[in-house]
Length: 140
Image 1 (cartoon, one colour):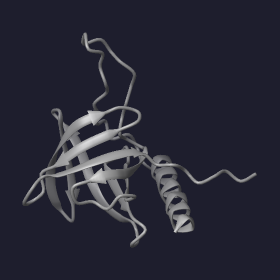
Image 2 (cartoon, rainbow, N blue to C red; image 1 turned 30 degrees about the horizontal axis):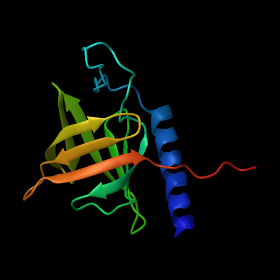
Image 3 (tube, rainbow, N blue to C red; image 1 turned 90 degrees about the vertical axis):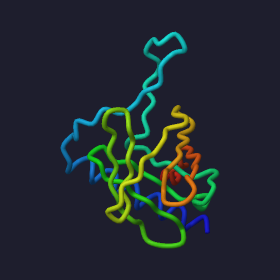
């Protein structure tokens, strides 16, 4: 199981690297954190980071998400091959597009250590807490 996760992370790293090298910037503005007084805080972004589901109301823990800069969304779990969707952030609204269907997404928390969202899929909204995924160990 650990080998599968390492292989999955390695594949996602390759996809992320290739996408960044081959794509132009999308020009999307993504949210960053702010201090309690409204001042600029540290820049926290969910973009170009491999996130791992830690808890969710319906997504399997361990599932990986990557929001690539140009708008591609990559999902991967140890149960199957990676899947692709799209995402956009316009006018302070995050939208995830899966199989051509757009879903509005509330950003409940965004920090360098946690990205918590609520996706308004058909039926009950789905809450997902994502944390940065551990990368595979570097070769010695």
